[in-house]
Length: 455
Image (cartoon, rainbow, N blue to C red; front, side, top):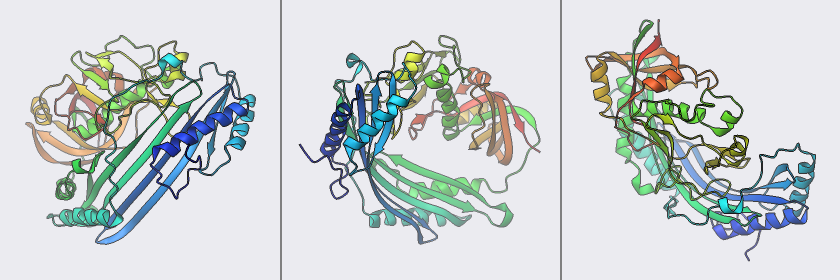
């Protein structure tokens, strides 16, 4: 067996040392008197650089390793973090002491052995590529060069390139022990157009598991530039009611409100307007919203969830009907439902949440939505959170473009769009032009009768 010391001197992404450390933590927990336990050992290596106006602004290179141990004593539990060279025995004893003083919670505990994942397909999440800081700097400089070369761009908000590789191992005292590695590559740019009090900025980025699938520097730089320049000479508009069309990037945020409202923990607390709505029509009948953690190279794919459960594709909304909530073990037990493998877990307690989300059942594209509406507001940027998941009230700052006869007329800034989420969901008219760029991959969507607060 390899050493259980997760030394920074070794390859931090190597899975065998993570396995050894996680399994050693379980042995320490048992020796300290825990009835059950689970442990997550993780490691990551990240390099990133941001260039602004030809000068290096931020250069980072970081390695991190850690372990989280959760112990159970009857219906009581506690969690501790352990440093790379921390004493596992002492940490386990501390966790058991904390658990004995914690309140009882029958909903918290490990999965039954027959619920644990036993096999999964190859998801190809790690390309094993870690470009040098020099290579990342070269890419960032190329992005900024192409961005600043575009007419109308007067300044740079920065161009960045980063790469991350990570490893994770989950072990439980009832027999689960598995891990996986992943990679993430990101390039981005922020352009500033105009000058004085008439400046506008906009951004573009590309993020992929495999470096070879990233958009090229020219596309990223030029797209950020074009988006910023188009926003110049923005006008305020008067308060009115009109059709609002979200471009796909903004529509992704709109769909995320549904995902948050369908969170099992929120449902169990009765802190979402979707509590008790399973089986009811919440979207137009043609629309299906699917969560799938098994997409090859998916941005949020994983072979098993944060509690060791397997998970396949799950329709949260099926033909317009709310069909499921996102459930981890605790929320499922509180709701007397079966878990569906949606536990997410960083360095803390598991929580339910989405993975890769797609929207199907729409038709046409953003241009056709605008043509159908005739006149309205095309949203390309949303500001703030602005959604109350208890009441469903929705209000967000927005910017974009006013359109007439389906064609953009002028940029719009400093307005607020407002409505009721439940009503917005039911009236949503989705296109079929999801770009495949986001973990929540939504097409453009049109909403009639939205309140637009302006001057």
